[in-house]
Image 1: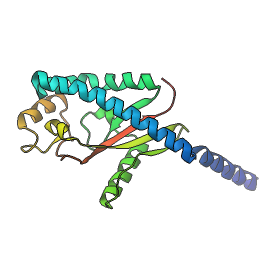
Image 2 (image 1 turned 90 degrees about the vertical axis):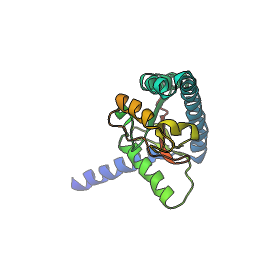
Image 3 (image 1 turned 120 degrees about the horizontal axis):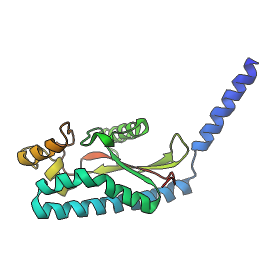
Length: 191
């Protein structure tokens, strides 16, 4: 009986492992689509934030981002029938906290950076068997106003405004090109 249970356990493990495998063609297709979705989300959110910055600086942009970033990501997600998340180990919004798979990917990217390697998107099946796209978010110069080094590229006034919206903010201290976090796009077709 123990042998049968042991063999059954091995069979389940192998079946699950095989379910996680993707062909190189599938990975390539999901990488292209993932990049397209991440770019579309960044353009939509970034464009709206730029408008608010022109209207009134951080005092207009930060509250807008706080109230609308999720909605904007959801609009793009619905268009593509995916789930979109931006996450990091240095959170601004606790609602964007990474799950265990995302924490693993963040650590993997950080390890590659420490080794001096280039970061490339990762596509793999998640624990539920859905294709999942992960890509690094590198900080752009225009993002330093709200995510930069305090007293250098980020003003204390901006930090105060952000701290009123996000009292536990950890998303500052970055320089242009720094690894900020990841795009996590799940092709779960639930939307």
